[in-house]
Amino acid sequence: MDALWRRLGSAVALAWRADRPAMILSVAAATLRGLLPVGLAWITKLALDALAGGAEPAELVPMAVGLAVLGVAVAVLPFLGEYFQGQLRRALSVLIEDQLFRAVNAQPGLRPFENPAFHDRLQLAHEAGQRAPQRVVGGGLQIAQNVFTVAGFIVALFTLNPLMVVLVVVAAIPAMRMQIQHSHRRAEMMWGVTANTRRRFFFAGLLTQLSAAKEIRLFGLGDHLRGHMLDELRTVNATERDLDRHTMRGQSVLSAVSAVVTGAGVVWALLAAAGGRLTIGDVSVFLAAAAGIQLGLAALAGEGAELHNALLMLRHYFDVVRSAPDLPVPEHPAELGPLRDGLVLRDVWFRYDDGHPWVLRGVDLVVPAGKSVALVGLNGAGKSTLVKLVCRLYDPDKGSVSWDGVDLRDTDPARLRERIGVLFQDYMCYDMSAAENIGLGDLATASDRDLVRAAAERAGTHERLAKLPRGYDTLLSRIFVTDSSDVEAGVVLSGGEWQRLALARTFMRDSRDVLILDEPSSGLDAEAEHAIHERLREHRRGRTSLLISHRLGAVRDADVIVVLDAGQIVEQGSHAELLALGGRYATLFTLQARGYGSES
Image (cartoon, rainbow, N blue to C red; front, side, top):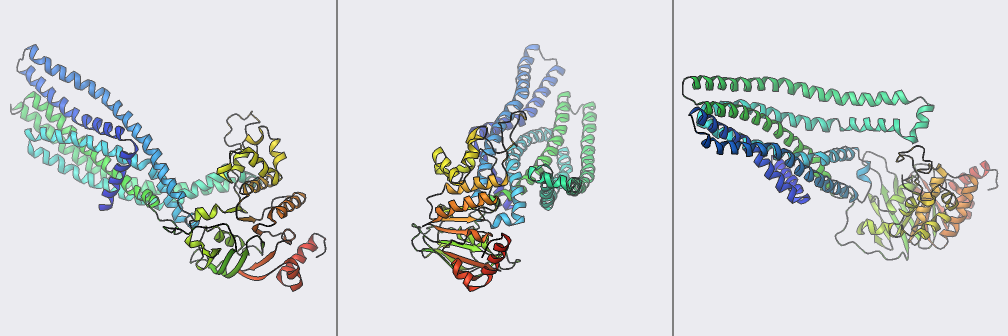
C-alpha cells in the first residue's frame, strides 16, 4: 500500500510539473462540479417547500435565480473541465514520453535490450506512461468530484434518516472491494499476456513489412503467420474474457443488493411523506440524495479501481525510468587522451548470460596505435563480440580492455564512443533522406553538406545519390509517401547501395582515434568490393583500425592478422607469417583462393 501511495504522489508531482495552471483549474472545476448537484437539490427543496407553503412570487425570485445560475454552471463546467484536463493530458504526454525514452537512452550498454523481460516491461511501461498518469490525474479528479457530491448528499440524507446513510454506504462497500480486487487481477493479467501481445505484434509486423514480403509470398507463409498472430490474440482475449466473466458475476449480485437497499429507502420516504413526517422538498432531497449517493459510490468504486489499476501499471513505468544503468558509469570517469600506445585486451572472458556458453575465453590481444589489425575466423568465433567490448557496449566478465592503460570500466562510455568510428555488420537503414542517413554518423557536422558529400565519395556512392530524384534530399523509403503517384517522394535502395551508405556514415567520423569495420563489403559485387577495399587500404594507412572480414584477400595487407576460433586466439601474425605457419589461416586462405581460381 505504501508503494501505491508513493506512485500516486509521483503521478501528481508529474502532473504538477507538466502544467501547473491546467492542474489547478482542473481541480477547481472538479470541485465545483462535485458540489453543484447538492446545491441544486437543496435549492430545489427550498423552492418546493416555499411553493407548498404558499410563498409570494417575490420570495421565489432568489431561488429561481440560484437555480438558473447553477443550471448554467452545470452546462458549462463539464466543457471547461474537459478543456483543462485536455491541456494537462497533452502536457503530461510530452513529459512522460521524454522521461521514458530519456531513461531508455541512458542505458549505455546492450544487455537490457537482449533481455525479453526488459522488452515486456518496456512495452508495459510505454503503455502505462501513455495512459496511466492521465488516468491517475483524471481519475483522481473524478474521485474528488464524486467525494464532494457523496459527502454533500450524505449530510443531506443524514438530516432525514441516519440509518439510511449507514445502509446505503455499507451496501456499496463490497462492490468497491470487488472493483479493487478486479484491478489487481487485471494488472496481473496484463503482465501475464505481455509476451503474447509482443508476439502478436511481431507476426502482424511480418505480414506488413517490405523486408519480409518476398519470402512470405515465395514460401506461402502468409496464412501460417496470420494463424500464429490470431492464436496469440485469442490467448489474450480468452484471458480477458475469464477475468470479465468473474467480475460480471460478482458485480451483478452486489449492484442488485445496493439497488434493493436504495429502493427500500425510496419506499420509506414516500410513506413518511404520506404520514406527514417529511415535506415535499424533503422527499425531493431524499430521492436526489439516495440516487446521488448510490451512483456516486458506484462511480467511486469504478474510478477507484481504475486509479488502483493505473497505479499498479505505473510500477512498470517507474521501474524503467528509475532503473540503474546496465554498465556502471564512474562518478568521476577517467579522461581519455588521443590513442598513443594502443588498445589492450588482457585475459578477456565474456558470455551474454549465465545460461549461455563463453563467447570469448581468455583473449589476450594488443591493437597498437597507428596499426591495422584484422580479425578472422568462422561464424561464432567471437569477432563481433570482441568489437562490442572495445566499444564498451558490454563489460567483460573477467579480464580487462584498456585504452593506453586506462581500463574502459573507468571511463564514460559516451566519451569513449566519441573516439571511435564503426561500421557494424548489421548496419541500420534509416527511413530518412540520403543526407540524413550519412549525417547521423556525426551529428556535430551533419549539416555540412561538403563533409557529407566527401564521405559519400569515399564510400563510392556519391554518383548514385546525386542522380536520385531530389539528390541527397531524397527520402530513402516509401513508408511515409501519401501520394503513390509522386515518384520523387521516396526511393528504395538495394542492399549493396545501403552498405555503401552505411560506410559513408562511418567515414563522417574520419578524425576518430579508432576505426572499426565489421564486414564492410559483404553486400557488394566483386568489382565494387575491390574498389571499396582499395579505398579502405588507403584510408587505414597510419590509422588504428580493426577489420573483420570473411574475405581473407581483403585483410592480407593488415599489419597483424588475428585468427579466432571458439572464442580463443589460435594464431596471429602478418599474412606472410601465417601462410608460412601452415595453420588455420593458411588452410582457410588456400580454400578461398582455390575457389576464386587464384594462387595462394
